[in-house]
Image (cartoon, rainbow over the protein chains, first blue to last red):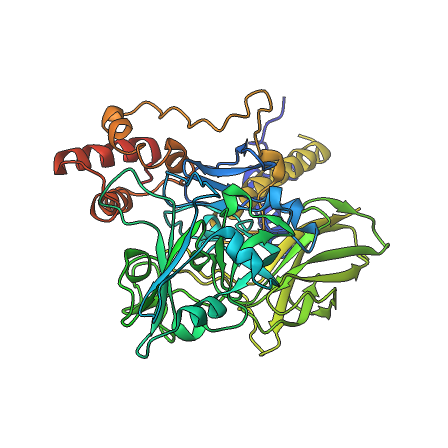
Length: 410
Length: 123
């Protein structure tokens, strides 16, 4: 049988040259186009594949379990299809393993410190005060940490460490007024009833500056989406700080102290810090100065149709998702179906207030079959825009780059 | 060998090489992570819904880990971490001792790091 060595019309060398250049051409054209149109479906990681087990806690649907003790549960993505996140799918995050066992009859909220008159309120006392409600996004400081590259240690959330609810309760400033602030008050601290078996670990406590505490939106909520707070989300009472990260939304709150000097508790002084404005963290080159994390950054996401699903070629498919910012409200949401080259305005859904999720919708008619990497971005009423690329922080905080969504048109 | 046969062999080889390069390039490009991993990856056993902590996998000094770490948090918190280099695990464990009250000797601290590197260590 004739082999490659024979000098037919194709010598062995010619054959090698041909196949190499042909595959080279395929490589350059095919790969470049594919990277642009269809990013890989799973996050790229330096380590093993992400952990995706679901657990079902009492009062909750099956949720992604980052931890079971203390519970750290992520909302499955489909529950963001409604503007208000259902209580039984709302994410859960506790720091300390001994969750409170509350006796409603003996529970008292104490207010003390730099006040004229320390006070105590039972739950019934609080419910007698004229209630106020606010719809506000609760987002974990570490939401999306699991998507950081390179990885950072901590709770490995995807994007579901957040939720939107109608919170009902009493204004913090009204209670502070009853107690009477002494002059020189600068901050207010809040302590939760969860605890650690280790005596050297301080209870979970946070503080906010006095001007934050005096905002009319800051409430002590006993109700979430018109029912009592679920135990896993802070029964009987939690702090709501609309527009700020959830670390401040202390759960199962029992003690409020007005302070005449800044709080130096671990959870504010050492934990939950971000680079000072104007400085950045980079892997291997961290910002020199840090401040406590505070306001939410503007973000936007796709929700439906489900990622990696197929939509009909040449027909209109309604894409939808959510957007939010730190309290000015959403001005525009834009969608790109050509990986960011051109953008079109989405329409905005019902306005539940500036601290709420804002639904957006966009009718998309793909004209070519194939894989698409859609991108969404939002701009707030104050003009805050998302960066195109996600920035890195040492603790996995503040992720807010453009989000992408893979769909195929068939 | 007839030209048509060589052409056909050549095309198949090209496709194979191109596919190889495609997957290789995908793993090297630091692409932007997408919103969520495929939901098909979720594993839920409805016959065993009790949120039990997982058993710590085998590794050196697992007993030290079990005796001193799971008092405050389940093994699951460790198992849901990505792999980290020894330096990162050393810092994490030291934080547990320094800030979160883990009562271990320096020797035990080293052993816990060894365990974590064995079960969740990267290069």
